[in-house]
Picture 1 (tube, one colour):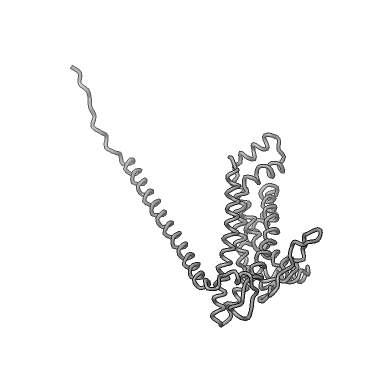
Picture 2 (cartoon, rainbow, N blue to C red):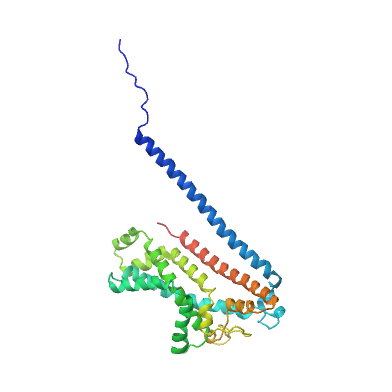
Length: 317
């Protein structure tokens, strides 16, 4: 007769118990962090929503087509924002045309072509520090450089170049991060089939990083459209009752650049002008202009986000 040695279940060791305790502690901390993350995010969204609703309720009586298509006036009931929103749109157009090519080009050079030396380190440090410089400093720089030195005057061109300088560090830093996010095997595969560095950058690296670059452009343009201090410093008007010349003409070559030399105003300055007046009706006008400014910002960001989404859909890793 043979006997089978049966052993009782082995009790969990201390190491196993400690590991289970660490897992439970990690799960608890993860859930706690997620809870506070959702709580803080909801708080920020509610504050933003409350501010927007308060602005909308105050400005709703003045939101109309006449308000959008009328020039400013000394009478609050007849005042509009036509020259202000047109000026903001034209300034943003020049800002984008100046900042995006220069910013992306600088990012590509620093990330893919520049050598690792003290000069490159100095440029990188300065680019990073420029992102934290107060906007009024850019206004003073533009006043001395563009207005007086180059003779551009108080024009849309000066405003566009000023805001381009302001958002240039944002575009450069975000574009470099987008380039770094591209997997290294993309570069290696391009070099493996005999591509030159420029072919690798233009045909592979830039297309794969366009989504991240657009994110930097979104952030920069959203900051630029609400700037007031540098625009006031370079001499933007607070009251203007005319529009710049049309960029499209009826004569050959059908395009005119006279509008970039025109005097201008923008929505933040128009709002500041109305808020500083004691008449309550002008406060309502300022609230309505704020709603339009937020709407323009959301439309601009929405278009950029849509383009980024379309770009990312075409990427196959």
